[in-house]
Length: 274
Image 1 (cartoon, rainbow, N blue to C red):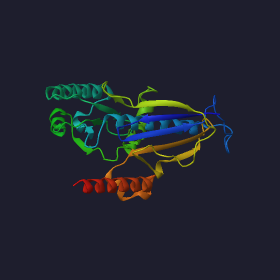
Image 2 (image 1 turned 90 degrees about the vertical axis):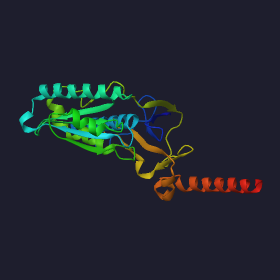
Image 3 (image 1 turned 45 degrees about the vertical axis):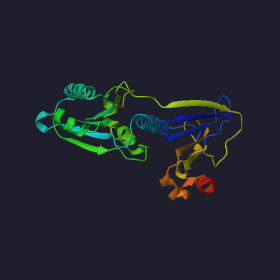
């Protein structure tokens, strides 16, 4: 009885794997201890899926060194939501024009918060060497704050913030589908879906050559909404800093041993030839 395997190429260095039993092809595991998913289960599952989708979109389109920008309004210039949309559009049009003059395309993901707090915008955008200066010059409505995207490439916290912290604004917007907006030039991660002709997967997954699996990325369980088993994990391309702590990665020690052996062999061959 086959199961479904989905491979998602988030970046050149990060590949995510999702495996689950299908109601069509695989086995169905009974809910335990519940017989049916609760509304809270469904809501939590939808929220987790929204975070996962956004995290992958960020990883696919932005790199460490790009920016998370917060655009605020001075109290004397604080608009309603309609006025804020106009101010944001004007700002983006100006930024897009400046980027193109410098030979770049502006990429962004934006969400706006206004429910139970002062209205402001969160923007993830690509950095072109002088982006902070451009933002300060072109955002005339209030203050701006910058955070550099961190280097692990996962972006889980940022995606969760965009989804969770804007929950009240999202519900109040009346649009059940739009938590954030994106520039049209963003790419979607490549996904490959396979039907694997096996009854179940191994509990300890094996990374493909050149990759390690962070141990804490391996998650197995039963989906409370579908009632079916799943296994998710992430494969990360091997880098020099990972070799310093192989115990944190599945396949780490073996890979280091192979690489050391290979490097030693190459050095010996080079010495013999000299």
